[in-house]
Amino acid sequence: MAADDESVVPGLTRDIEVDESTGLMIVRTTQNVETILEDLQARARLLDARANWKGPMHHVGSIPLNVFYDLQQRFRDPRTGEIDKAGFAQARLRWIQDNPHFRARPGRLL
Image (cartoon, rainbow, N blue to C red):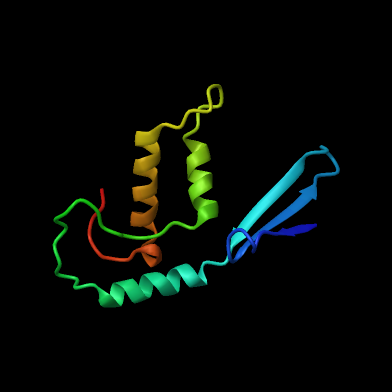
């Protein structure tokens, strides 16, 4: 069974199945990231690679939503539901650093 979440996030697809041996429900979420990559390539073309990093904020890249939520879940305390904000922030930067196709500008993040 596939639940199409296109109405919520373009390109997002969720497949749901039941493992007959355990009775557990398995949910797989995938996202077509072509539009994200096209947007980042357009941003990179407009950017002066020699521009400095001065200022409070810079768009350095994009993380697909299914990856974002997966990273967030890894830093959630199962007892309290609280998210380790510092660890989660580091993980996002590390993911963008390790996945250069999702970068909007060059440079070292960590």
